[in-house]
Length: 299
Image (cartoon, rainbow, N blue to C red; front, side, top):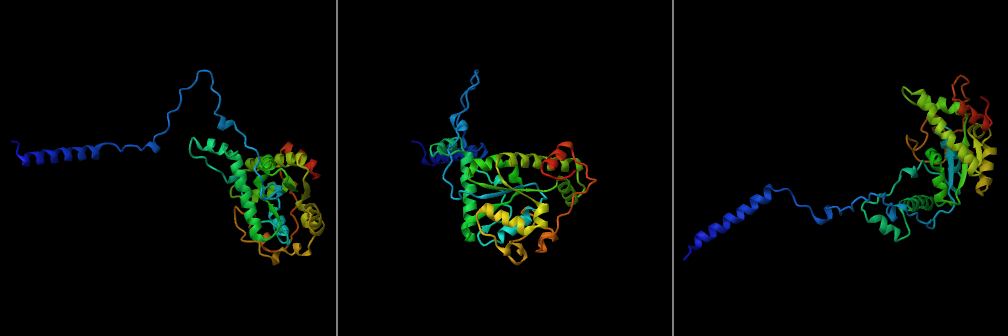
């Protein structure tokens, strides 16, 4: 008869062997960690999955007619913002950078799940953007919201797609003055890159001017005749003009800091100051000169 002590020793050795093998073996992946097998590539250019080509219909918007200030950088959009934000019915917060707020569909089946809800990635982002505007408007207790983020100018077709009833204010400034201001703001500026950046903004501004039927103002006019320009803006937005708009320094507009708008001593002064004229010695590319002339500037 087999000695029970030897049987127990044998079982112990087998168990230790299994533990040693588990310790030195690579970790096993769970089913969730194993990607689904991809079908073999078709030699005849297979069509894209339906979820990738699907375009969702627009969902209802909480904010039906937001206002977007389209401008280049360094064009006085922060001054315009605080003047508008000083109105009792207009909320114009700092730059919101909605175009950098994205939705990530993290699994292969997520797009299909959203399509079943009549949504796609773009429309999910539109719903999120709209919710951000609505939340800010609700918190303010006002009824008109204005977003003045300059890079919105670069995506104006998408803004129009997101909000078909949006209203637009085009804020122009002499391109030569924009180049000068942008160059002065940067350490060791790349002059060619600065001119290219201003040209990119200017091209998009011209597209918007020709396609959106916006209310057009200039920074030079705004600083020279602020009452006249803000009265016109109020007419465009359907609100009565308020003299307190011109005294923006007496209102709370939040912190002035980089990435959220202008933070210079000029804007912090609380007073409307005259726009600096364009330096006649600034070199502008031919196309930028052409656009400046189209906007009524002398070059």
